[in-house]
Length: 208
Image (cartoon, rainbow, N blue to C red; front, side, top):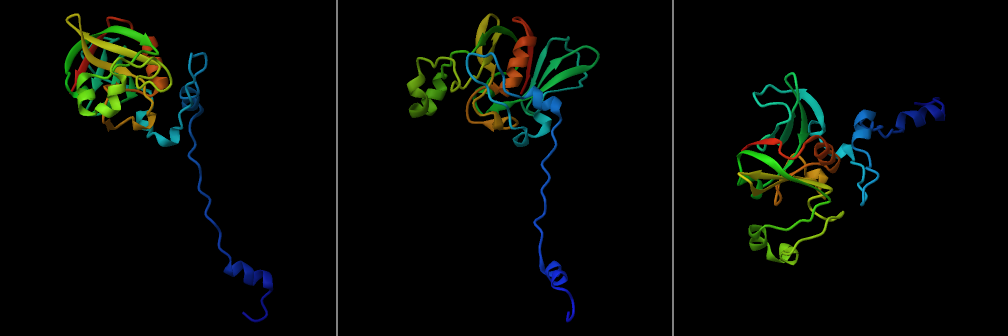
C-alpha cells in the first residue's frame, strides 16, 4: 500500500450504510385511506405500511350465485365481499372476534345502520372481563374511543337482532387477525365506504 494517496486508503477502509428504500404506495390508496374530514370526530389517515396490501379495499373477480348487493362475510379468510355485477365484488379486509363473531352463521339482513353508534358490551363480555367491560354495562356514547368506530351495520334475522355487527375500530392494525372481542371490524375508511353503499334490508351471508 506504500505510495497510495491518503484518499485511496480512506476509500478502502470506509463503510457505507445501505439505503433502505421506503415502499412506494399508489396515491390511489393513499387517498382512499387518508384522513376523513367533515365528521363529528377526527378520523386519522391509515399508515398503510403497517397493513398488508391484501387487506386494502379492492375490486376482485368473485363468482357466486348471490345477487348483486349481497354481503358475503368469509370469517376464516378475513374478507368481506360486496357482490357486484358481472362476476365481480368489492373486497374488504376484516378483523374477526374470537368469540362473539363465531356464534352466528348463515343468512341475515342489515336491520339497522348507525353513524357514530353507541356501544354496549354483551353479557358474555362483561362476565368474561368484568373489570374491563363492567363500567360500560349501560353503554358508551359514540366517539373516537368507542370500539364500534364511526359506523355500524346491525344484522337481524327473523326481525330480531343477532348481536352480530359490522363496524369500525379503534385498533385498525388488527385487520386480518382474530382479536379478543368484537364482531366484524373494518378499517374506519372502509366501514364508512361500506355504510354508504349498503341499504337497510340488504342480504348478508356469513361463512363460518
